Length: 360
Image (cartoon, rainbow, N blue to C red; front, side, top):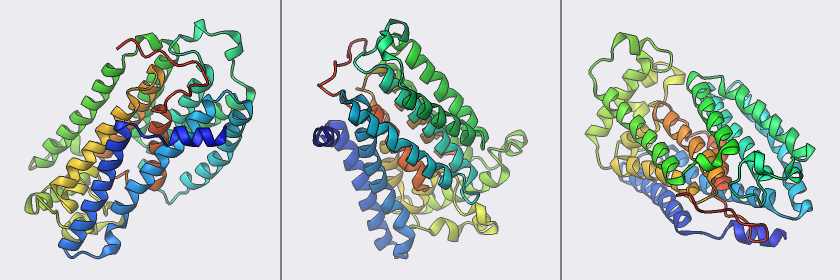
């Protein structure tokens, strides 16, 4: 059974291959720009490591999903019992006071999504897209799974409230997770994929528009999430990007070129993943990063409707949050987000009844 789970989890589909190809292209472009701009190689380590971490975490998510869906009670038990150890490690690492508060909040949103996926996988094993009221009594969660789901949900919410954006996004993800569990027949895969992709595009448009303004309205600059410092950081990033549109200034160049970034330790980054990538690696890198965001949504779209909605909501929440912050540079956030879309996009094991794929 374990060998079969591994074989199915790593079996790539067209979207998997496209996602992997874009990740590889991003890493290669980062290496090329580092050489061509004559920047220190150590500055590129984040750009090179994150694609590999993301690809590996998607595979881990697939393994977890197939383990939770397996008919073998031993495999399901192993999947559930290994998760508390992971949660303890997560809590120890994420609750470290040195970790950026917005990164903690982003991790919390993904943990809440993982809790919803675990609940969905256990409740709907062999039930397809039927609502909870139509499930047989035998589908009640085992105690261990119920406890693990509750712990993950509490940890996710506790972390998400550490930032205003995280609180808003976790409420959206939680609401859509409830909808996916109670009314899966109301979910349309193409609609959920289209809406979440549109949210990413809208967030990008807002960031580009704001960063191009000579000055923000006072009411916006005084807001805690979009502070005056962030306005200056975005302006500096856009200026560096405009000066070097193809290659960017090179990894680490934003800090060297931005006076506001050098003024305080916590302002070292552009506080926008797209602007950071564009300013340091140029337009191709920004486009590849956007492609990763969109392909992450498409990766979960073919899954059962409940999983597709949860995965798309959590992944796009991170993408939207990253438009106004630098969250992809934190490995714990990337690992969790990759696990979410890996789990959400996993195919149902043939040994269990397959989910209905109708309702497009």
